[in-house]
Amino acid sequence: ERLVGPALVTPAAARARALRCSGDLEAAERPPVLLVPGTSLTPMENWGPTYLPLLLDRGHAVCLVSLPAYATRDVQANVEYVASAIHTMARRSSRPISTIGHSQGALLPQAALRTWPGLAPYVADVIGIAGVYDAGSAAVRRRCAEPCVPVLHQLATGSAFLAQLARRPLPGGPAYTNLGVLGDRTVTPQPAANQQEGATSLMLQEVCPGRPVPQPQHAMIAGDAVALALTLDALDHPGPAAPHRLDPGTCDLGYYPEFDAENFLAPTGDHYSRLADPVVREPVLW
Image 1 (cartoon, rainbow, N blue to C red):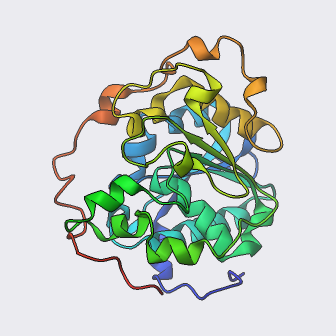
Image 2 (image 1 turned 180 degrees about the vertical axis):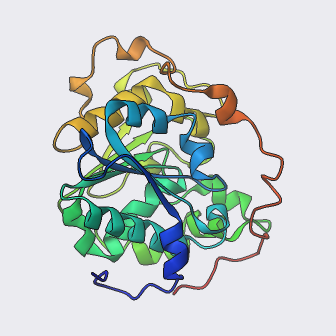
């Protein structure tokens, strides 16, 4: 079955190889989840020390999608990989799947559904953690005053890619939950950058007033107990996450016990050498 909508231009074989699943998408105790990594990270770097083992222990089947050039070359290609992953998971499961993405990975499922709305009936939840959305990031715009990796130009406030995407509404059906932190220095300004028409925006410090998030906030939200509780609430209930359903003691927690902070923050030797070359402008629109 082919995706209905714009033709995919990235290689089908590469998209197929990029998806790796654990558990039975059809028979697992809980519905399948697709984990989408952020810019410059492999799926295991982003999710291995954070949500992957936890979701598997809960009984979810979990799939990881690898993105070309570690998601640093062209967001349009990354969107195709995520759309293909959703499509493949939907064909292998008779129940709706959910997606969880961090940073750029939060935008990609939204963009996939907005480009191929026929995927929407197969998705229950689209959960973003410290995501960049239609407003882009003013901090990234400033950073890209000098040459930067191509995808950052596309995620910066006022980019041509985001302007084009903004003309496509979020399709109905899935519940969209955007989780952010005040003081995020990568996706700015907050809380405005966390807003997306059709999505529920929840800032951790609004759910838990005065809540500190250790630096770097943009990354460490992946280990935050409140962010996890809201994510699991969205997965376990119809509709977006609802703070009133959280256990009253959740705001007293820091990191969740399963968070492997040491490995999450450990730099890899080839981290910078593997990125796309810096450029002075964003890739052309497809």
